[in-house]
Amino acid sequence: METARPTAGKRTEGCSYDPEMGLPKGLRAPAREVKNPRREPTLDSAALGVDGRELQRRRLKEPVGQSTLASDEAADLAPIEVRELSRRFGATTALDGVSLRVGPGSIHGLLGPNGAGKTTLLRCLVGLTRPDSGLARVLGLDPARSPRELRRRVGIIPSGDRSFYLRISGLENLVFFARMHGLRRREAIRRARQLLEEFELLEAQYRRVGLYSHGMQKRLGVARAFLTDPDVVFVDEATHDLDPDGARRVREAIAGAAHAGAAVIWTTQRVEEVRGFVNDLTLLHRGSVRFQGTVPELLAHSGQSRYLLRVRTGRGEGPKALGPELERLLAGIGTLTAADPDEADTCTLSLSPGSVLSDAIAALAAADVQVLACHEERSEIEDAFLRLTDDGKPGES
Image (cartoon, rainbow, N blue to C red; front, side):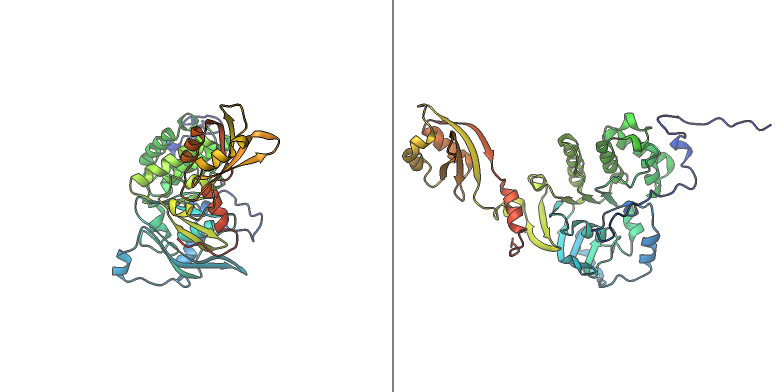
């Protein structure tokens, strides 16, 4: 009579085998859900090395419109180099002559509304979409022709959570992807546990990923991107739907990678997120570049800064009674007008170009006006974003 073989490993929260014993045979890629084929494509599990059949087919063909670089010109390429890249989907132009350059240790923000072409650009850079014309190079290689060479050197953080195996643990997922990148089993396990500890997921390492919260799955996605200490990192709206603390952790991880020398493209719709975080940025709208430059250069496209103030005077009067004196003190700094006729203590402060809020508050204090509350009606960076994406003339940096 054949005796049952004892099960090795730990059974914890739905996991029936130890990752040190290897992954089960016949493990299949997660099913992809296609809700709308006309919708702008997203980064999915193919970019992470799960399904290479489409990439293998593309390797056999010369990418359309992609020129071959001479060796001396290739040596001058930045880690991420895009030149006049264009891509159409039927009658829709997803990318229209986009160019950008990201050096080592730099975080380049890719900003734009829905449908701007951000994800399509990232798909071109990871080899999932072939451009119609122009040039795309990552670490000097053509992504469409050299996906395997790039896979271990590039980290990808997709916006969605559909690229994990939900029925196995977080540890097993990371070990699987590490093995796909060529790490030996013991090294893959060591690196996976190291990253789980770094992203505060070690206590949940044996828990099925399907039982992870949304924030935990996001952090697991960031951990996966750093399995091989990548030279290039692509981030596709990784902080979307995250709480402030979770978003901060993701930004800190990306900043650490850039500090170590990685070139990063950070894609986001959160306009305030790029302030103080990215080195420079590209603003896309309807597939075209509307702005390229630094954040201070972007702020130059904003209009007049306006603040809603709640004030109190030492004389017990509303600021309206101090009109002539306030006009004199705020001359050249800005103007103060009543925000609501029924509320005497609420005013709107409009700053003149080149003026800062602290100058206005100092002028109000000189008139014995105390500022109790201050709220920016619309941030400068948001105002610049809206001005440059209003389908008017593209901004120039």
